[in-house]
Structure formats: structure tokens, C-alpha cells
Image 1 (cartoon, one colour):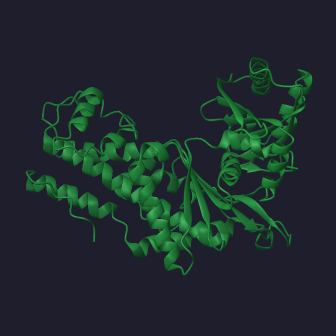
Image 2 (tube, one colour; image 1 turned 180 degrees about the vertical axis):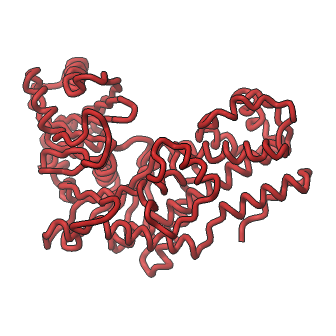
Image 3 (spheres, rainbow, N blue to C red; image 1 turned 90 degrees about the vertical axis):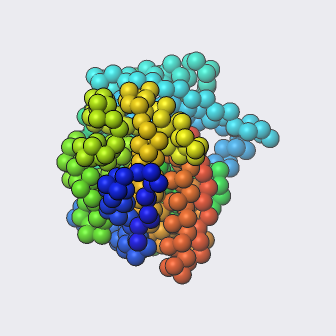
Length: 447
């Protein structure tokens, strides 16, 4: 049964709509268990030789990467990491330098890429970074991340999956294309690794928290990776060892009967740029949570059950105008919810009563808790698939820092479900807002 969200002082109509929404967003323990089992099957199916629907992508990265990193530390080595954000046209570069007996020195820099001759531009930015931080003499190993599923064609190279539209990166061997312009510009760099961001997050997590077997990214989108026994991957036809797997968790649910999107979820999907895909991501990720809340608020406004009748609705009427980051402010526990009122006034030019503020806070809480529970269920399914005796899960991404209730509910849900499966409860660690660019630099040491 859903929690009672009735607000003292609110009208009967307000409380009725509030509790109807709460009932629609409520997820039972039985449903969460079904989601965990469904995610297990989703990942298992994605590892088959021929699969209908999204695939789980296998990496050449193995748990032995920790030994390669230890060797680099002893040799006081330097490496480079790079993250290519194809959607935002943004490039992040970092260097990591190990010095005996001291914490590593890490430098980071962000660039924006031109749309034409993108690999030439990447090499130019790389040269600027190397020169500004006086790195060398080289050759410096470079690990490359990209925010798309990567088919790793060798230990050194990989290309974006054929079915993904990402402009100049589509179906291109990134190591070869980038390596060619690096040679052309005589840079002291050699591409040694190309992975998806979630694989590099797993590497960074394993370096910081030993025995990490699962990595989860809670960022603008969502994804998870884990170490799988090669004998359980039909597409590899191998019998020994373990390798990293990118689950493509964002796309879970596209062919599932277990997830039960609400009418607000269907509305968001219909109006999105990728209708019919990334079903799970649209229920749980930073990119979409604020928009779900905005749709709920506008339903209250359409029913004339929130805000003054003459309130300016122009800003709230704009899609994605209610940022997910606002939901942190909604955790305001003061008697008058002053921070909530200040945000509504400053961000939307709306003067909200105390009951209005309580309604908005309640809607944010409902959306947050549903998302967190669903993510916890997904993690439980992946932990079960990883078959670790006592799984260590590391979480990275901006939601870890801006929405603590989300993270707490996620970990609590996952632990409860895993225990219910008869497995030891997983241990959770927080890696921080961004681990994958540093993880790419660490993956560059892979041999």
C-alpha cells in the first residue's frame, strides 16, 4: 500500500489527487523483486551470441587491471584519460601521475569540440593539455572513454555500436582514427584503451575500493557494469577468467512487461527525442526526474489545485524547466519550507502558499523514491548475475552528491532484495561525481 501523503490544511480535492498520484507511483516489494529478476534475464540475454534487443557489451578489461596499476605506481608512471561526450560535444582530458609514497597528481581540463574534423580537433586539444601541464617525454598511454556503447574490437581499439547514431563517431574504430591524427601531429601519445564510461568507472572504483565487482553511474543517464565469468558468456566462447561487462542498463525495459510506466511516463516518452527507447532511464535518471515532477505539478495546475489562479505558468509550461537539481531543495525540513518557496518564486515567478510548497515537496519525494527503488532492484539483479560471494558496489555520478535520499533508498532496496535472494548483502561505496575520466587514465595501463 502506498504511503498516505495527505497534508493537514489542504483541501479534500488536493489530498485526493496527491494520493492518487502516490498510488500510481508506488512500487511494491513483489514488483521490485520482479524487476530484479527481469534485469538478471535482460543482462543474461544480452550476453548471448545472437540477441534480439539491446546487447550487453563485453570489454577486454579484467580484474587483473589492478596489477597493471600497481606496476605503474612502482614505476612512477604517467598516463592520460579522455572522455568524449558525443551528445554535448564536450571533451574531458585528465592526467594521472604516480609518485612513490604520495597521492597521485591529477590534472583535469574540459574542452568543447567542433563538429567538423572532430578527431583533428581532439588531437589539437590533447596537444594543448600536454603542453599546458608540461607532460612528457612519452609515449604517454592514453585511455579513451565514450558515452556510447562500445564494441571493443581488440585490446587497443573499439568502435561505437552500429545501431547508434552519433555523427562522426558512428562505426569508426576510435583508436585507429585518433591514432592517425596523433601520429600526424607528432604527439607523444599512444592510445592503449577504448571503453565505455561505465567500464572505466569500474576500473576507477576497483582501484579506490578493492574487490569492487559492480559499478553504477547515476548521472544525466544511468548505466552499470560488473565482472562476469567468461565461461558464462556464450558470445566469447571462453572458459577461464573474468571480464568487465557494460550492461546498457538505460535501455532495460524496452521489451519488458515488468515495468509499469504511468501516464506521466508515457507522456514524457512520447514527447522525448528517443520515443520508445531507454525506458528504464526515463524512469530513474537525472535527465528526466525533474520533467516527471513538472508534469505532475502542471496536472495540479490544470485542476486548479495549486498556486494562485493568476499565477504565471509560462516558465513551468516549458518542458524540462523544472531541473532535477531543484529536487534537492525540496528536501527542506523547515516549518515554513522557506527554501522551497524561494525557489518557486525565483525560478518560476510563483508565490506559493505553505500547502502549495508541501504539495511540490511531496511530488518530488514520490518521484525520487520510485526511481531509487527501481534502481536498487536493478542493482540487485546485477549483483545476482555477478555471482560474487559478497559483492562490492561502487556508485558514481552527480546524483550521489545532490540527492542523498535517492542514494540511501537505492542501497537499502538493493541490500534488502539481495538478502531475500539468499545472498550476502552487498557493500556500497560512493566514488564521487565523476570517476570515469580518471578511470580511463587508469585503464590506459592495461596490458
